[in-house]
Amino acid sequence: MYTGRGQRVPKDVVSVRFHPSVTEVENGAFNDCTKLQKVVLNDGLVKIKFSAFTRCRSLQSITLPSTVINIEHSTFGCCSSLEEVMLNVGLKEIGDSAFLSCTSLQSITIPSTVLEIGEGAFAYCRSLRELVLNDGLKMIQEEAFRGCESLQSITLPSTITEIGMSTFQDCRNLRVVELREGLQKIGDRVFFNCDSLQSITLPSTLTEIGNATFGVCSILRQVGLHEGIQTIGTMAFRGCSSLERFTFPTISTRLNNVLEMETELIRIRQLNEIDAIRGDMIVRNGTELFVSGAVLRGGSSWNTIKASLDQILSWIRYHEIKEETTLFELALWKTKLDQADEATDINREAYRIEVPGPVKDAILQYLW
Image (cartoon, rainbow, N blue to C red; front, side, top):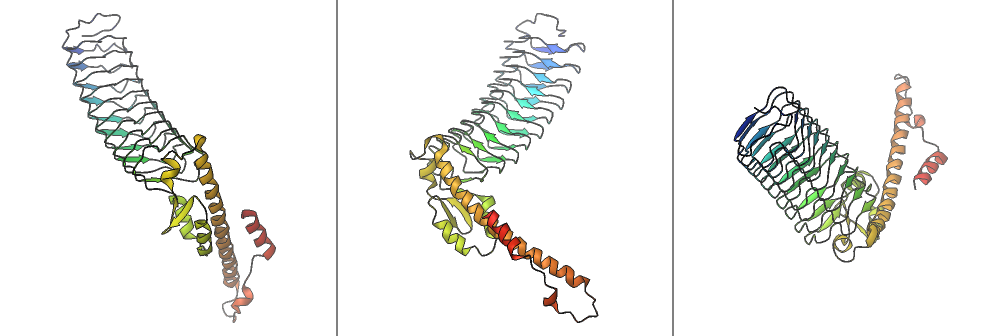
C-alpha cells in the first residue's frame, strides 16, 4: 500500500495499491522500479509528479482516475512495456516527455479537458498507431509526437491554433493529415521527413508556415493553399521531389461560380506565377519556386505569388458584385410586380427598376 508522505518504495516491488488519502505521487516515487507490473491508483489522486514512474520497464497498463488534473515532466518516460494508457476526462495537462519512448504504446485518446500536450510528451512511441485528439485541446508543443513511426493518420481539432516545432517530424508512415479550420500557424519542421504523406490541404485560417515544415516529404504530390497565408518559411517544401502542384481550392470555387470569366482566364494565363487548368487555380512551376534552390529567402517567392493572387481576387470580386447588382435589380422588379393589381394588364417592362448607373459604377470602380 502506497501512502505517500516520503514513503520509501523498494526497487523490486511488483505491484502497488494506493491508499485513498493519497493526492500526489511524489517526485521519482517509483523511478527505476523495473519489476513493477501493476499499479492501482486511487480516486482522489490529483497530481503525478516529476519522473514518478520513469523506467518502470515491466509496467504494461495504467488507468488514471478522473480526479488527476496534471501529469508532470517524464512521469512515465521510458516505460518500454507500457501498452495501454487510459486517460480520463478531468485531466488538463500532459507534461513534457510524460510518455517519452514508451515504445510498446499502441493507442492513446486525449480527453477533451486536456488543454496542452507538452514538449516531447509522446516522442519516439514507435508502436503508436492510433491517436485521438478531442476539441478543447489548444496547444501541441514541440516534438510532442516526433518519431512515432507507426502513426498513419491524424486529425487535429478546430480548437488548436498552433502546432509547435517538429511535432510530427519523422512520422514516416503518416499518410493522412486533416487540419481543421482555426489553425493559424504550423511551426518549423512539423512534418519534416514524413515520407508517406502524399497530399495535404491547409485550412483557410492558416497564416504562417514555418521553415522546412514539409521538408523531405518525398512522395508529397499536391498541396492545397489559401490566399490568407502571409508567410511561407525558407525551404518549407525543400526535398519534396514528387511535388507536382499547389492548388487554391477556395479561389477555384469562386472562379468557377462567376460569369463572363473567359476574358479573365486569358488574363490569368498571362501571369508568370499562376495558371488556371480545368477550373483549378495552381502555382505554375511550383517545384522550382518552393522545392529547388530557386526558393528565395524570407518567403519572397510567396510574396510574388500572393501579388498575383490578389490581382485574381480583385477580378473575381468585380464579377461577383456585378452579378449581385443584377440580382438586386431583378429582386426590385419582382417586388413591384407583386405589388401590382393582378387584374390589371401589366406592362412588365414598365415595372423594371435599375440600380442607377453612377451607383453601379461607383461600386465596381471601388472593387476594381
